[in-house]
Amino acid sequence: MIIAFTAITLGISLIWVSAEKLEKYSVLTAQKFGLSPFFIGSTVIAFGTSAPEMLTTFFVSLEGKGTMVIGNVIGSNVANLSLVFGSMLLVVSLRKLTIKQESSIKRDLLILITSSILVWIIIAINPFHIISSMVLFASLFLVIAFWYKNGKKNETDNKLTISESNVLMKLSLSLIALVFAAWLITKGANLILEEFNLGELFIGYTVLAIGTSLPEIAASISLALKGRYETVSGTLIGSNIFNGLCVLAIPGLFMNQEMSLGWSYHEWSWLMLILFVITFVFASYILSISRKERKASLILSMLFLSSYFISLYFAY
Image (cartoon, rainbow, N blue to C red; front, side, top):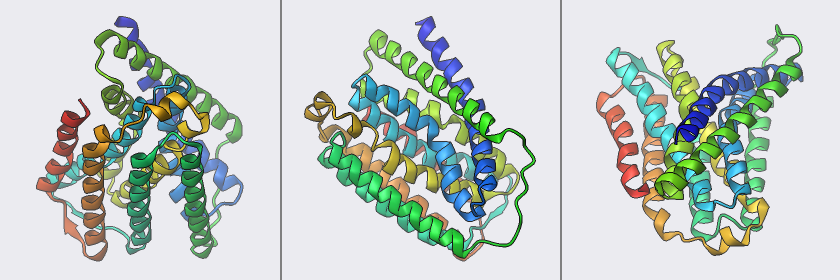
């Protein structure tokens, strides 16, 4: 028991540091190779924030724990919108500040809703089949191509300077640290699973999902205090799209027949419904503040935060 909690604590602490560094050096590397700021914001940063989920999913898939994989994906997306965005709204509303969003985010909201529908269909059919993985990866490729095309259109002549030396080496070290952190969390989660017999679904939905989302929670609150609300919502949209189209595609690559044959959609129907409702409410709110500046709603922040704890009932 002590070993399990020690492994998870160390893993989360390491993720907290290494995820931030990975995001930083990913952006610097992208700048070094001349990618546009728009493309960096919509893909590179989103990849950085989704890297913990990707790596934990990889290690869990190796052990054949399919239910824990899906719990990690759905739990991370629910945590992003309910806990992360809810925390940001709470901070802004308590400070009685107004919030505004760029109108260009509308197309990303459409991609988020569309990808959420696709994820629901894949989970309802079979998320552990190689065809499911190919469909998700193909969709991700189209999204990245679309973002890249729009990035080229919106690219400015501003020169981005690289102030860090040995960026690629630091990026590699950050990734190695993140891999080790994901392995620690996975091992700790498995030990808790064996000790308490809570079920793969609940462990994936809580320990893995919240553990990998903690850096986003801290970063979002920090950005909210600095008034960079559009950065928070943009990163969350990109992160949830990557989680759905990339992280969910990982287990199918292993073609594990036990995961595939043992799959049952019934236990996930309520959690998927909660995720879709939260996503729709989030998209509607972001759309409304893209049209007109509004004061942050304390009631809405409470609804977002409470929705995660309501979802725990169905996960358990």
